[in-house]
Image (tube, rainbow, N blue to C red; front, side, top):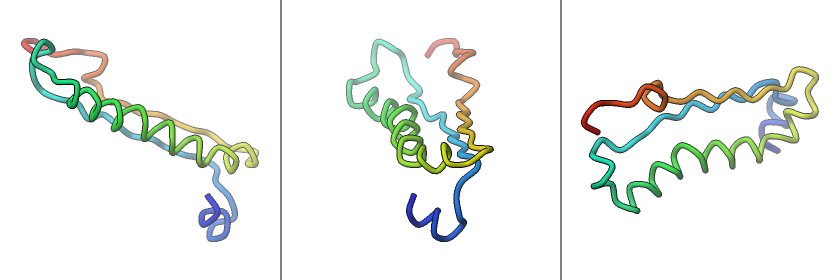
Length: 79
């Protein structure tokens, strides 16, 4: 956040784009695979937004936009 503030003078928008997932049957998905998906899709978004939130709040236009994979809403057969 400090480097962004110094180099650019602030931050108006943060776009988190995530959507990694494990292809495989639910019953066969390991706890390790679940942890990888949670880290990729939730933890990175949370930590990045939390770190940059002060800059977004300081901006009159500050916005955080989160974009996920379409598959999260549609699902897939035989997965």
